[in-house]
Figure (cartoon, rainbow, N blue to C red):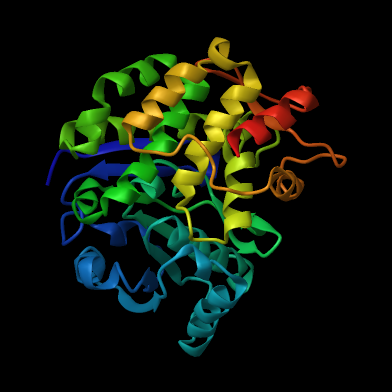
Length: 356
């Protein structure tokens, strides 16, 4: 097991640690110390179960543990899947001192957190993310939820975990496509808040794609540090936290129009970041550097063939919309993002038409 690194998400009495290391699963870390009650329900999926379930169980000594395995994929991020988890809890006689443990990527984490928020009006849960995207983004910050046919993550709740356990060794089994999709969220942090980190990514992108352990560990740690600071400042996205949605207004619309699961979330966000940079003002906002870095990461810089009118209609269901008006995360410069409804509508039309 490598040296542990710990980052605190500072939310007063509800603060929790993000623990990062390699070899933490399989008895390498006592996760039971973060489980207040006697029993757990591990929620995983059909892909992760044979890879890591037994290893996770070794980290929960002295606890009564049951498990449920979900179908794998964004298409199953639904209320019906949440109902399956709730049925399992009820049938097992789970009480308010039961802890849910999410073992998997962002879909598993979001679904498990939402089930934990709902069951008996809220029980504890722990995130054990196994994909790069989940490790650097979705496992941290307490956003939980499921998709609706009309939009991504429209149904959900803020429900913070008790801990986030990141075993970077799980990335060894991550498919190349999913690793690259996770890099989109890493690149996002540099673009919106840390220009020096963006420059570091430019210098190290090939090492990250090659799964260099030191580079991945550094990228995960810095991403988590940046997100933890923003969440501590604005837990429920009333202000600054919304900058974390850079590229997501376009990206979520792409996912909805294509059908959830056709493109990975990070792929859609990558194309969305490029469109947001173009709407921000082009090269003055770092469009050229963002585009080159996304291309080097093997990520798309244009959406698939979707009618511009369909994308615009889908963006109307974005959660940042206020008083029927779209709001975008735009860049004044690399590392300097704002959320605004003051954008050039004609320029938006041009960006949509040019992208398609």
